[in-house]
Length: 220
Image (cartoon, rainbow, N blue to C red; front, side):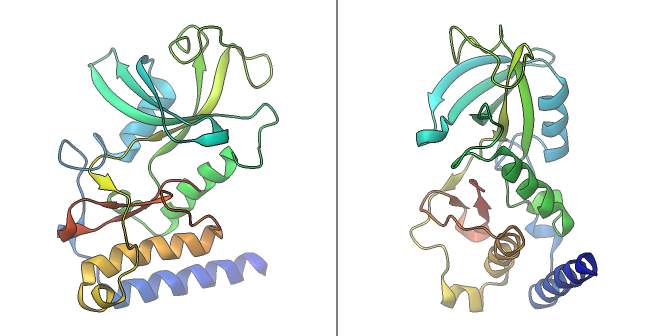
């Protein structure tokens, strides 16, 4: 019964959003040089999970106690370069401010009602980087979960052409700009479903293209 009530609630939210803000194909943001990610989400998921890569550069990502870093990856198979936000999994599997399972669940839940072109949460994959490949991050790496010869963490694709907005919700624009209202509504539905409780500046990003002001939740 509980699952039926949840499904009904989700259905009502999605139907209401679709009726109020009809979806247009022209609103889809393609992946690529002018988009927010270099390849479609499904392709990025597959490559991060299955293909070997090299870590070319390591920078801080403002992660504070979570130890988040920005890694620049290169896939030898075709030379694709991909930047990710990297968070190692805590030894206990879950930390007070670093919960990998919640990051992954937020990414999966958006699939219930969004097409890949409209994802709010950047592509996020659990990856165990072999110790030898991890040395650019830590010269003396050690396994962080069990005795596996790798470092387990969450790799989230780094978004391009985005910024921290001065104002996330503009009531007047919401009333007059259907495209803006559509993207903001997608984020609100997801935030409701996952009970998002961390609205700090920087946890939400918007597209720099004001004609297609998408909203992204980057810390869940």
